[in-house]
Image 1 (cartoon, rainbow, N blue to C red):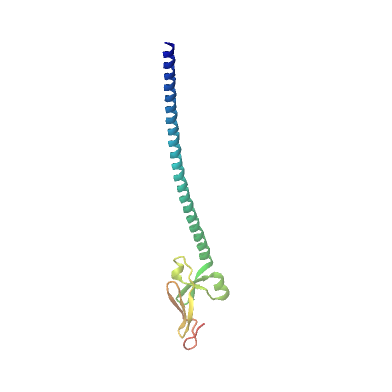
Image 2 (cartoon, rainbow, N blue to C red):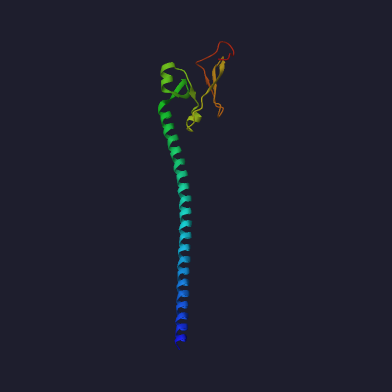
Length: 151
C-alpha cells in the first residue's frame, strides 16, 4: 500500500510539474507576443517619426525660402525704366547708378528673380529679354546711334 501511495504521490507531483511547465510556457508565449507587438509599434513610430522629420525639414526649407524672398522683395522696387516701361531693380542700384540689373516683372511676381539681358541697342531703344519667359522690353530712352550695335 505504501508503494501505491508513493507511486500516486509521484504521479501527482509529475502532473503538477507538467501543469506548471505548461502555465509557464503559456506565460512566456504571451510575453513574447507582447514583445513582438511592442516591436511592431516601435517600428511604426520610428517610421512615422522619420516621415515627420522629413516634413519638418521640408517646411523649414520653405520658410527659409519665403524669408529670403521677403528680403529680396524688401530690397527691390518697381522702377519705371522709361515712360510706361517697368522693371524691378534693387533700390540701392537704382538710386546709386541708375543701372540694372533689371528683373523681369513677370518672373518677379512669380517669386523668381530673372535678370533681363541687354540684347543690344537699336534705333528705337535698348532691347532687354528675360531668359526664362522670353519677355522683351524696349527702353526707348537708351537709343543707339542710327542702327544697331552691341553693348
